[in-house]
Length: 402
Image 1 (cartoon, one colour):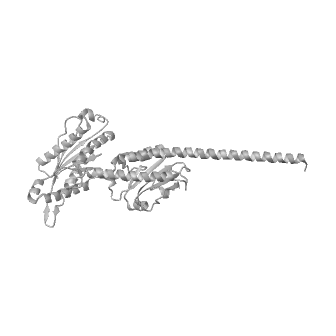
Image 2: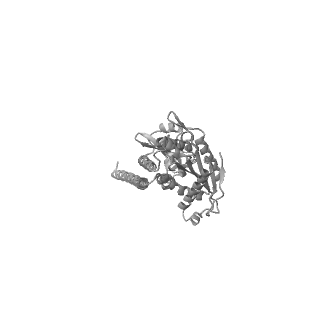
C-alpha cells in the first residue's frame, strides 16, 4: 500500500470516528435531556404531591378532608374519576360523616362498606398499590364507570388492617400502566390513611360530647347545632323539614313511685323504640328530662304526622319490662311542626325571622306548643301545628287520636 493510499485510509477512519463520536454525543445529549426533563417532571409532581399532603394534614374536619381528597386532588392531578371506599361494618361512620357526603347515587365519590361481600373483598385486597388496565369484572365494585381505561388502586392501611381504599381512574389507557413506579402514590396513601383515621377519631371525640350519657342518643347541644344546618340545607334544596317534640306521659309518677333507677331504664327503652322508627339521617336528641326532639329532613307535614304516629305506637304497643317483676305501660305525647320551602320563599328566611337560628327556635317552639296541646287534650296522641309560614302565624292545630 502506497503512502497516499495509507493517508486516504487514515483520513477515512478519522472521519468515521468523528461521525461516531458526534453520533454518540447526540445520543448522550438526547438522553441527558430526557433525564433532565424527567427530573423536572418528577420535581413538579413531587411539588403537587407535597401541596396536597400539606392540605390533608391541615384539614380540620372529616368534611374538609373528604373535600380535599374528592375535589382538589382530582383537579390537581387531572383525574377523570376517583372514589373512596371506607370500611363501616358497625355502621358507625354514618354518624360521623355528614349526610350530604354519603351520596348513594351511581358514580358517587364516597362509599361506606358494610355488606359482608364488600367487606370480604376489602379484606383480601392487596395491601400494595396496583396499577393497570381497568377491568369491569375486577374493578367495578371499586369504581363503577364504564369509561375508565386505566386505574390505580391505593389501599389505606393502618396497623396492619385495610380501613379502606382510594382509587384513581383515567380515560387514558396508558395513564396508570401496570408495574409502574408508585413511590409517590405509596407515600400519599399512607398519609391519606393517617389523616382519615385522625379525622374520624376527632369526629368521635366531638360526638362523645354531643351524646346523652344515659340514653346514648344525641343531646340538646347537638340538636341545637344541627337544627340551623338542616334549615339552611332545606332552603337550598327547596325541601320541607319537620320537627317533632316528644314527652313521656306521667313520667314524674314513675320516678316518684319506683325511683330514678327505674325512670332511667324507662328513658333508655323509650329512646330505643323511637330510634327504631327513624331513618339513619333523622336526628333524635334527648332535649331535657323526659323530653325528646326529632328533626326530620326532607319530610313534609303529612309524612311527619305518620312518623309521630308510628313513634307513639312503638312506645305504647308493648309494655316496658324492668328487671324480672316490674312491667309498666308507658305512653308518649307529640307535637309536630313543618317548614315548607318553595321558590317563592327561598332566600327569604333571614328577612322573615332575622336569622336562621331564630327560625329554628320558632320551628321547635311551635312543635312544643302542639305538644302542650296534646297533653291538655288527654295525652298519648300527636297534635299537628301544621306549616310554619314565613310570618308569625301557624295553622290551626289538628289532632291525631290513636
